[in-house]
Image 1 (cartoon, helix red, strand yellow):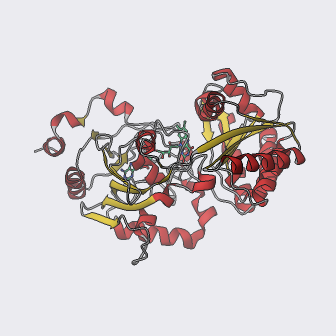
Image 2 (tube, rainbow, N blue to C red):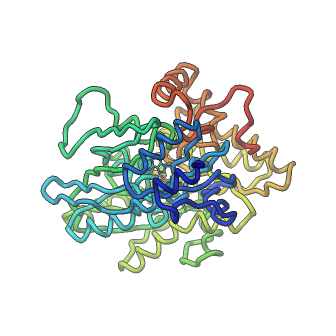
Image 3 (cartoon, rainbow, N blue to C red):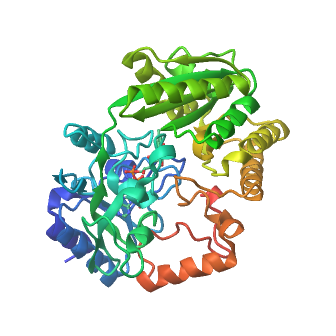
Length: 466
Ligand SMILES: Cc1cc2nc3c(=O)[nH]c(=O)nc-3n(C[C@H](O)[C@H](O)[C@H](O)COP(=O)(O)OP(=O)(O)OC[C@H]3O[C@@H](n4cnc5c(N)ncnc54)[C@H](O)[C@@H]3O)c2cc1C
């Protein structure tokens, strides 16, 4: 039997894809990379995933787990003749437990679908990547995804109570449960969450849920100088307020959004902040908004406007969510960065990014989850222009160096994947990298799980060139 025959025997013939068209669509993600996989297999059960892992181990074939392919660091790109293991058919919500406030889901459940389902029961799953309609819980767990609401509620890892993982050799590990507290041994849930498909395939996830807040409000503050917006963020958080979200959009980002899908953003402003607040007591929310307004105005906002209807609020958040496609229309390519810095360093970081854009003659719109210091400077470019790409590469390095010098890190939510692996040592240090490599080789001694990701290869190809 050939390898493909064996895969067909495991997952069923219609679930093994080999045509050129299929290999093309499973070969890219939200980045600019494109690679053809060996084949694509779409299992429907944990047993099938385990059988595929055993086969890959026997044949020493690389496996790249894949959910919806919206990743922004190249994690789902199949390198080195990898087999793509797509979990999209494993998309059932297995249980919503109202008493224990947990949901048990398969990895292919789309984030927005889970949110809608739990909200029908008055419950709430907070992590809300802007890609919530285009990304699945498996991908969210593998990248430890964040989103606007993570300022108040924390990221995906804060909601992972249990995982079922098929380890590289096909053994099935279950860790965690419905219990709230659990400090028995090493925290394996934390290890696998954010491991970017390099340690195994996640096949089941138990997620913590919260009661749904009764009231939600949105406000927008307008600034003539982005620095004042950054200062407002620091002042509001330092005052002990706990908004659900504080999102920043600079002028270039707003212009791209308005060209793509007009939302009435103030194009004469240098920047805006979008505030979300939520809770169960309307009077408390009104009070929070009044304090946010006073602090924004005291720190240079020219205006702060409260969304008067659900429609207006939805329009503002929709504008936030279309930034990626809006920027994608401005230039042929974009390098979307994801630095995370201490909040107090936002003004210095933004000044540095603007300086880099000027010096390197590049368009670098900045937006992001300003409340938690997670900024997305996006370097707009054209990969066919070699001279421009040299400047892009320098600009990316300078942005990372600045973030690290300011006490920050390379990635707040998108992960390292292919895109940032050459900068890993600069961030985590030689010892950090040594420990991570030791974990990887203990769990995946043959190196079959998602090779080429996270770890820089000495003398290997620069990921920027792939
Ligand atoms: C428009 C847009 C907006 C975005 N906004 C945000 C945002 O606000 N916040 C944010 O955090 N991210 C954001 N992202 C990035 C992306 O959506 C997230 O990283 C998301 O979690 C990826 O999910 P996915 O289902 O698309 O995973 P994929 O892209 O398919 O995979 C991502 C990684 O997870 C691994 N993986 C997938 N499934 C499994 C599994 N079952 N087991 C083990 N490993 C697995 C893959 O190997 C890969 O390394 C955005 C992307 C786009 C395109």
